Amino acid sequence: MPTYDMKNTKTGEIKEMFLKISEKEAMIKSGEWEQVFTAAPDLVTHTGNMINKTSGDWKDLLKKIKKSAGTRVANTIKV
Image 1 (cartoon, helix red, strand yellow):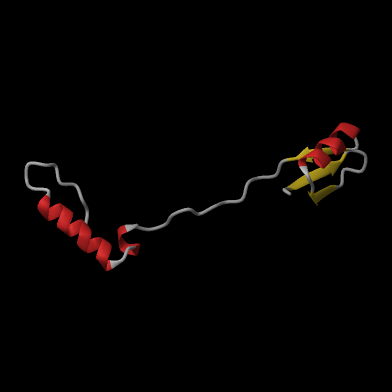
Image 2 (cartoon, helix red, strand yellow):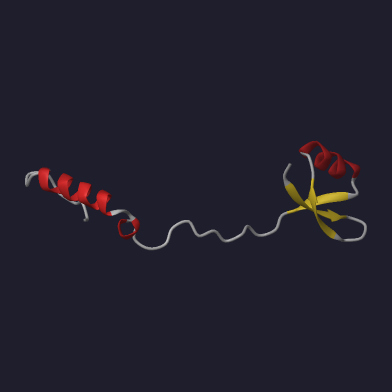
């Protein structure tokens, strides 16, 4: 079950509620509650260079691929 921020329309009180979707919809339909949307949390998905965070085996494989790619191919693999 998801968590919703619900505001009581009479008192202005905002509560975080753990509800089924059907329960939330029934509360909104009654007119006593409305759903409020707060700012989404800041998420950090990636920082730094991914090559620096990989194992030595992966770097060795990239070096082999780069070496055997030849000179006629635009070789842009960063090792």
